[in-house]
Length: 165
Length: 99
Image 1 (tube, each protein chain N blue to C red):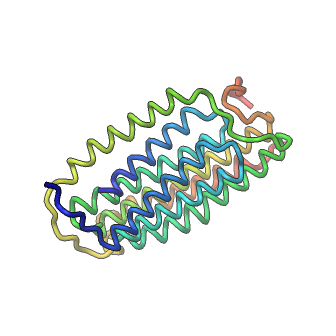
Image 2 (cartoon, each protein chain N blue to C red):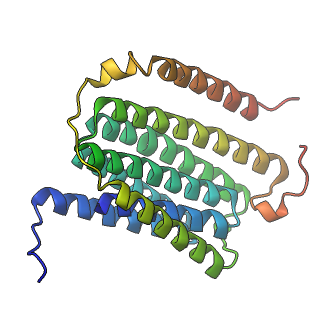
């Protein structure tokens, strides 16, 4: 006999955010319209931020909103506007075949879910430490390298964008 | 558990988009979807295994998020630069490696 489902409000929020995220991602990879691609991607990114917030990673949720929704998505939309204008307004995102990529995506999803699911069956241990202590303590080297990497990326983008006469 | 499934699904959808799309920007968008799936999977697995997303795990998550955003920015800049110089938007039409 199956035990009764005990779904809390938090579980419902996580479930809704997950469903919206996957739906947004599907819209962005299946649509041929530029605007729907951007909107689907925006929905997916905001849903990911909601998932982070609902499982207790508040800082990561805000960072996701700033960097992905406010940065990457805006960059993508600008690039889409520039490129579709240069292509004469032609619709974007034609696809090759669908069957093999869909099979590859499905196999990837199942493989990751089958591996990650049993891994999560291990026991729980209490979390400790503040985020700043982590960033400025054990992860200080990675934190500083991330800053250098961002600077290098910025210089690279400027170098790529500047036309050489 | 449902967040783990969502992360795996996002990765799968991203893989589908990378393999099935012809245009550079669409492939980059699918790559970002897959990266978001990786982040969700990391956060959800940590939350389930450790009981909560600890500070160290959250810091790692933010660092990977920053790296993914930098990768997206450089990829988009390359795509715009190549398209502006050659007028080509599809991988199939990109024949020469030097521009």
